[in-house]
Image (cartoon, rainbow, N blue to C red):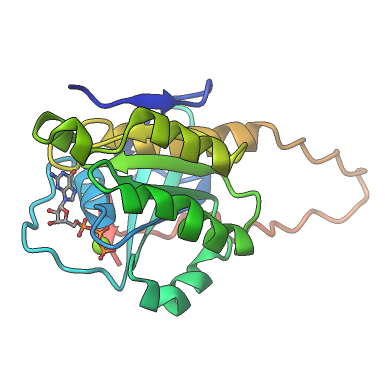
Length: 235
Ligand SMILES: Nc1nc2c(ncn2[C@@H]2O[C@H](COP(=O)(O)OP(=O)(O)OP(=O)(O)O)[C@@H](O)[C@H]2O)c(=O)[nH]1
Ligand SMILES: [Mg+2]
């Protein structure tokens, strides 16, 4: 049974990781949230390493950031990937991370109905309390389990779509992925980058300054060129 893909942006593009000889035009801050144990860290590790996550001994995250550069040939972005603690006790640590977030990846596990319910009961209210309009990508993790578990051990398509519609118009993408097989992992982050690329292309160009006026000061604090950490680094 292959992974379900419920929604993708019409602007979906394919981005590949590039080395630090490329200069990013924009840093995209992505925060990954969801219940403890639903597979956030594994998803990020699979993406940054391009191979299955290899940590069978589950280690709960407190806070971690990974950086990588990606390009679609015309635009290069620095992804700043923020892995969070799924445990409710760590809410105080999570909330500062929502500042300046560009895209939120909200995860639930396809073998855990409570993790899906908590998308609407816990995670979306928490993030929207700080960033009401932030684009959200919903990800049903561990979709390899669809081949191993019976129907009654899995969330249903109807339940997934109901949650998606309850989150509403801020859902820009909704898909299932597996950090074990790698299915759709890259697509999750292609969706994030494509949503931002489209948003940036819709920003109206700044009106031309009169010849005698002072040169504009570049206030883009998030644009970076100083990251020399390689293709993908843990900071
Ligand atoms: N079958 C399967 N297991 C997975 C997958 N992703 C993660 N797991 C397992 O699920 C457990 C939890 O994974 P993590 O990635 O650490 O979960 P987390 O969401 O980061 O958890 P916290 O850091 O506590 O919030 C680990 O034992 C993983 O090996 C997947 O795609 N398929
Ligand atoms: Mg983790």
